[in-house]
Length: 395
Image: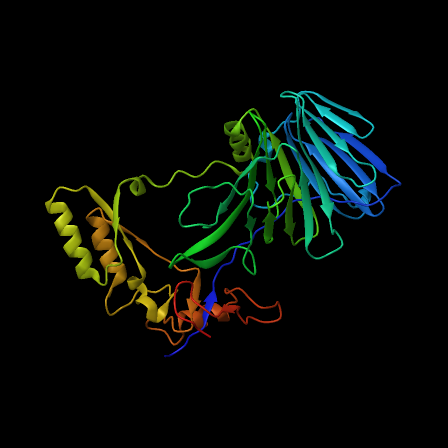
């Protein structure tokens, strides 16, 4: 059996939280801008910078260094699009190592730079967040809370085909080699994609959220109910802690940071059909005519892998000119009839993915431009995996 190499085109990341530790000689500095208070502490070569975005949204950065290394405002990744929505707390005070807003009381441990959060409005401890292994390439954040009963969020991770339970308690989120990845699951293939927002729930209305603003791979360990662990790559550790009366409020404040989901084009809200799969334009025509004869208000078709040639060229980004010739003119013809297309795309590309009417394959073209995930920064040599999820072994 012929074997192929399959290469990842995009592997987005995972992430992690924050913080810093180390001993004494604590130095604290406060600056209160007209809008956002910033409080800084350093201890034995580590620092923590805290921005009070509102009465119940706190932004934290920790790293090696001193307060002289802190840049303001705290850096945010492209995941954060709407931080300017926050205008600062309605009430702010600082007394030693205790910071207060109308809704929260925040205590910084002078020896470890761990931070404890208390919800004054609802009268319960959110948790205590401590850093571990800050001098290592992989750092760990420990989240301690007696009220940790349930953990939800974090994105798409197919865990048990016989259960729809999304609670992470007793489980681990284990990322791929580079973070998000494409994995086999229950005979199929699925994307393991993390969105670094964790919703922590306790008794009654006790709840809080942690959003990790870090683009690197992140793993989670929820097997200890009193202490959760998040481990990540990265130098500066940055996160937001979010308090609220209920999950609806937590999500609303989270979306105030990331922005609301974009409304898709109106066309996509219509009737779209798909099957595995339409092998050529004629099969599309037969299905379209049948649907219209039976008065279905059809808006479009989702094309599975046959549009780029099927398994002989997995991940190709060019139409198969044998079964889907004259793609540009045919797509225009269908559009004139009110029909549009959504083509499937794989998160990897094989060496056999051929670009028609070209001296280069799609694979060679993408590799020459360094568009594939690379093994290192010295050249464009791509990373590849040895098995297609749910498919045959490959080199």
